[in-house]
Image (cartoon, rainbow, N blue to C red; front, side):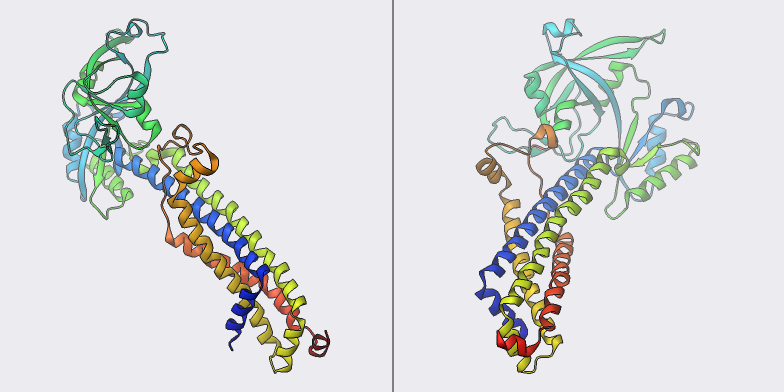
Length: 422
C-alpha cells in the first residue's frame, strides 16, 4: 500500500479531516468568485472604454493646432499610419436636454433639465446596442451605421429619466462663443432616433450621440472636431499605434514636439478610474487569499491532533521499517490530500456561485447587492482567468505543504517503543 493511498484512507475515515477540507473549500470558493467578478468588471470597463475611444485618441488642442490646418489634413496624415484600420473624428461638448415644449426649457434654473455630454459622431461606435420596442426582447448591436441628420440617440437610463422614447423631440441647450468672446446660449431641437445601451450605467445616463456636423453647426465650432479615435488592426499594440500616429503628425507638420497628451492610448483615456480598478483587483486578491491561508493554517492543529491520536499507527509503521523520512512524507501527503480535496470542492462551489450570482442575490440576500448606480453595470460581469486559478491552486497546495511539515516532523520524532506502548 502506497503512502498516498494510506493518506486517502485516513482522510475518508476521519470526519475532522473532511471538515478541514471543507474549510479550505470555502476559502477557495470565495476567492474564486471574487476574482471572477473583479476580472469581469475590469474586462467590461476596458471593453467599454475601448469600444468608444478606440485603441488610441488624437486630442485636438485648438490653441496648439497647426495654423490653417483642417480636419482633412489630420485625416490624410493619419491615413498613412501603418496598421491603422479606421479613424473617426469626434466633437465632444456639454449641454442640457429637456422635452420640447416643456416649461423647463424656458427656465434653465429648473432641475427638470438633464446635463450630459453631447458626442458628435459620423458613425456609431462599436459596442453600443439598440433597445427593442418590446422590453422583453434583448438589445441588438447597431450595424456600421451613420448618424442621421437631426437625430439624437440617448442612453436607456437617460431616456427613462427624461421620459422620452423613439420619435419624441428633445431640446438641447448649450452655448457658443459670441462675437465679443462671451458665451451665447443656443438651443436646437433633435428627434430621438434610438435608445441605446452600452452596459454601463454612467454612460447610459450622461451622454447622447448626435451627428458631428449638426453639433458643430449648433455651437459654432469651425474645426468640427476635438478628437480623432484610432483603431488598429488586430495584433497591433495600442502603444505602437499611438507612437506611429504621433510620428505621422510630426512628419506632416501638424504637431510640435513636447505637446503633452496630444496622442494617447485607450488606457490613458481610462485615467484614474481604470487604474483604481486594477489596484482593487490586486488588493482584493491579497485580502481574500489570506482567508485561504487561515483555512490552510488549521492543518497544523488538525494534523497535530491526528499525530496524537495515531501514535500507535506511527509506531507500527516505524516497527515495520518506515524511516523518519517516510513518516514525514506520509503526513505531508495527508495534508496535500486534504488541500487537494478542498481545492477541488472550492472550485466547484466557486463555479456554481459565479454562474448563479443573480439567484444568490435574490434568494440569500433578498435584494440586489450589485446595483448599477454603484457598480456602473446593469449586470454582474464575470470572467474566469484560468491562469489566476492555477496560481491560486498552486499557492493553496504550497501553503498546505508548509503547514503540514511541522506535524509531520513531530510524528517522525516519536519513539517507536513509546508509541507502541500507548
